[in-house]
Image (cartoon, rainbow, N blue to C red; front, top):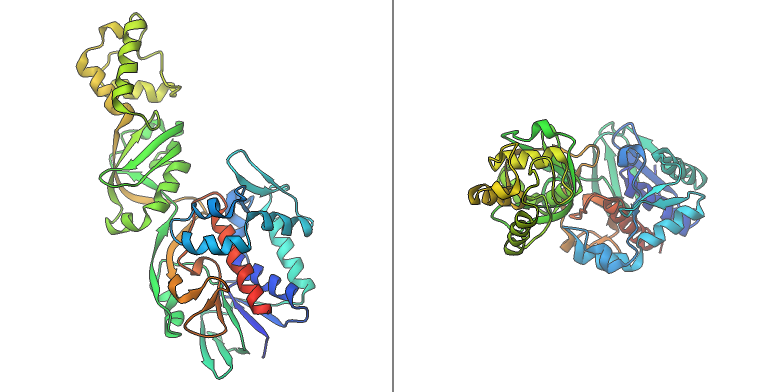
Length: 406
């Protein structure tokens, strides 16, 4: 069974690459091989079933800053294909998109099924052959062709192969790619929430602060933004972004680490202290516990006051220096002892994968094996939450398709 192009992986990058290549070169005979029985499974569940297609960041250079791994390569790739191109492509296919206030872009239907139907319809029109449940594959070069064998004993042949199998924390997942001569950067999880080993704030689950700063103690890693208290620990966009940037470090320390949260965002301690001293002077008769400051939720403010040993009846003019110091400490360096992680819903991402040094990012072709191409999360590229990982999939797949079609 011979094809002009075999795409290994029926996810976002695989489908997009197959469709783009077939559109650029009419008549191209393309085969998609998918290990599981479901196509585009990650597209289906992403964004809570709404599919966060990309992000409203249309400057290629700024867009690349949202990737802990792969930023340098993506600066080149995004010059060729970025978020605006994706929006335009879907519009041409009759799929309207809209941006939310935080920059995430979704289909107007708010249904991931809209994106899946767009892909499957396009693949059908282009007569792309799709096989699911093919099991593990093995790929070997045989003269000018690649021989692709499946676990079920099926054999396919093609002069060109696009690898878009996604990521996996199991190193054995990449064995067949290593046999082709490629180096695999250790895969580890990214995009997760933190488990609080002491659960001191468990009863405040659901409380959120819009502009907090969260830091990993003793490191340079920090993020600012919404932080959410959950029944297992700490979540929210800032936490999940932090997990991406610190993914390799957190794996090294076996997900046992200390976190410091400033519930009032990034502040300079001396100026912050002076503001509280001034508040104490001007609002001396005001009760402390029942009048939250800094727009903090009442329940969180009350807990921070309790940790500072401030009694319910206390007014500001009665506040001791010791309690003031404790309150400041818990407002700007609230400590949490973390042990373990929880995958952020369906947004699981792997950092690590095929070493980018072995891929020509102008074409996405392997520097090791001619006519072998890569796209998507199988590469050592991963982004923050917010549509950035799909954008990397679309862009790498487009660049690979353009070269494949040529």
